Image (cartoon, rainbow, N blue to C red):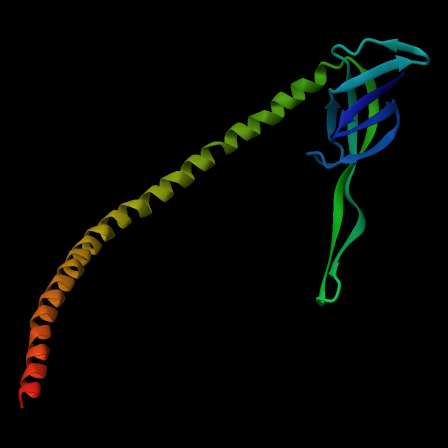
Length: 177
């Protein structure tokens, strides 16, 4: 029996016992996963309905692909940039093709540890709330300083008005001589 499954944006034709290399998937070596997006299934030349059909697979290894060199260049500008990339992938071994209902039960057991990690993020916002209180205390003296600064330019303006006629008066007196 064969099936065509879709994972990582690609389609693979698989049969029991096949090994395929797919895009990175969560899990460690030895974990069993279920590929639920079955597009086509059949036995020989006969096609079978894919409703509720799943493909059970086992993760053999997590790895990286060959290095791809990325080289950018702009001629006559002395601009050259060289970098590389290694795509992560997962090697799967297809265990069985068919309706498997025991696998989702393990998925529920895996979701329970995630519920335990949920309280940790709640503790983090509480720590963020404390600095906000200290900032509020710091804002009050800053507001008082701002008021003093606002009052200081008014005094400076009044002193410039007084100073301007004196300079003008000095010029007039020198012209009179």
